Amino acid sequence: MEFFNNFLGISDSKWRGIKGSLFKLVGLGIHEAPGTLIVNQKLTKISSTTITAFCRLAVTLATGDKFWLSYTDGKIWRQDTADVFTLVYTTAPAAGAAGCLGAKEFNGFFYWATQSRLHRIPSTAAATTTAANWTANAVPDWATFGITDSEFHPMAIVLSNKLYIGDGNRVAYVDNTSTFNTANALDILAPNRIKSIGSYNVDLVLGTITAQSVNTCQVIRWDTSITPAIPTYVETINENGINCFMKAGEYLLAQCGTAGNWYVYNGQTLLPYKKIPGVWTPTQFGEVYPDSVAEFKGIPVFGLSNSPAAGNTTGNPADQGLYTLGRYSNDYPRVMNGPEYVISQDKVANIEIGAIIVEGNNMYMAWKDGTTYGVDKVDYSLKYASAYLETMVISPDPEFISTLGKCFADYVSLPASTSITFSYKVNHGSYVALVSVDDTVNFLVYAEENIQGRVFQIKLAFGVNLNDAPQIEAFGVKIQ
Image 1: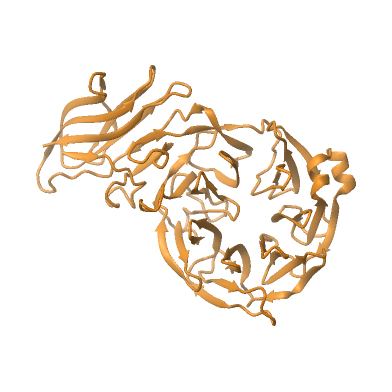
Image 2: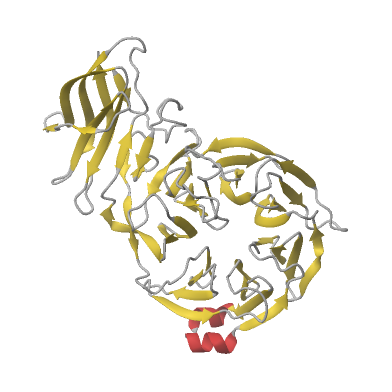
């Protein structure tokens, strides 16, 4: 008998994974109540039709106001406390493309970058004014970049005294006297371009890219207080870009390249850490964008996107959505799970996940689905209606035929009008549904059948009723 009661995220493939992992866990949480599986809350679109472009950037000001910035056309939307979205500004730079490539609040100002220019507005004006007053208070083209990178201007604050901004192979900055320096903060070796920025202790960490067609990039650590400005450590790795950095407890993680690789940074080098399970090829790839990371209820989350690059012709190497990469506490292993949250379009293919904002126990995320765009919010009034899991391949005896006799799930709760249903797959075929029986005395749902085959997979689907959903503590498969 195969028995599952220690749910440790998704496996490396449908054949192998750590003990307790499963091949698929879509819409299911493993961290809220360790030792059980719960159906996660639904993501509900809150932006109506107001958001008309893909927001890869978002900023929460010290006032609590949230702003979403278009990566393509320079539009900026304000989200108020009632989750009403208003277009407050459209960036029209004097030179270069209008797409917003970096944004951060610093020293009382909200800064955002386009290809050639750095723009700003006082934070108090941004938070309290209408679109007309935004126009009156914003300072477009406040400063000009020296390199004018067309794709990336990531921003970070270290030691609270400077806003550092990536610009090609340079680090520009704004200091606390509102002086802009475009050339002398730090130069790195071209053709490296700064794609992502993180921090390690009080040092700045830069992730570079040369081009998607070049499998060489660098991770650079810089003690910003040292004069003259020279990198503390530089390591070259064989990936086509460092896409983002993400804090995971005491670790700084980096998602690199187009094959789902996560690394852990030890202060000097990047060490292989985790891999997003999938089928990654030259025409089927994706990445995690620099602002598509956050920490939600103490658990690191990231959004996996299907790459929009022209070379991604077959697409969808893995399910897209919001994954977790963490643990309940130090007593548990750090595991990858997901997608735990599926966007309101109820799709896990051909989508992109943009910026993520966490505010207390609320989480918001931007997305792109073809020519449709939006911002979702975790909806505490509804459960996700299409949650399911799949086991890895079960091979009782590699040489002989076995018989699948019974599938069962032990539940903690099975509210009215909710359900747990089973399907089986034999010899790598298609899933076939089974008829489930609810044993209300023993808190057990089961399905019995006599199916012969060499290998099996089992699927459990969770039927919900508004905000009610099953919660299971174990399930098993009897095979002889």
